[in-house]
Image (cartoon, rainbow, N blue to C red; front, side):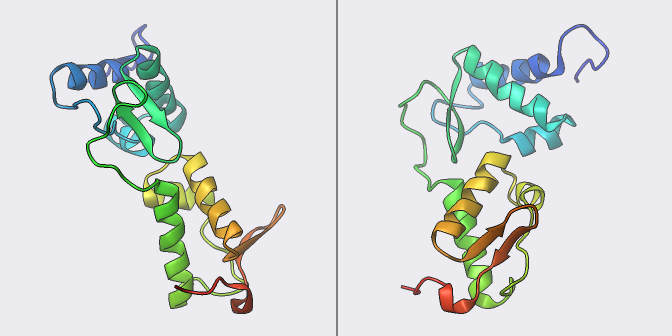
Length: 160
């Protein structure tokens, strides 16, 4: 139980809980640490607090973060239990499939960063990387101050 009125910051208290999970063996070297979204839900904390939890665990040298993949127990370079594709690539592929199936239609906006963050349980940078990948592949185009829209089908990449 977190002490929300005490002198110890919430992010330190949550980091202590994760630290305990690591030292008890519940989280082992190479295991992923709960995502910011998972920490928000489990501990009822703000996104910025969840982000500070990862920062505190890195400061303690208990974990390392791989951009677009997550935070993992152990030092940089430690083998992870299950090598995975980058989350942003998985999200981009899922959105591209939804475009191909017609769920996301040409000249209509794709889900916002906030929606992608909630839907996939990822940080803002991961959602942005997914959209960037879609842009690079020419599935979408971003209009400044308006949003990101599905491209005309004549611009879509050729399916394998």
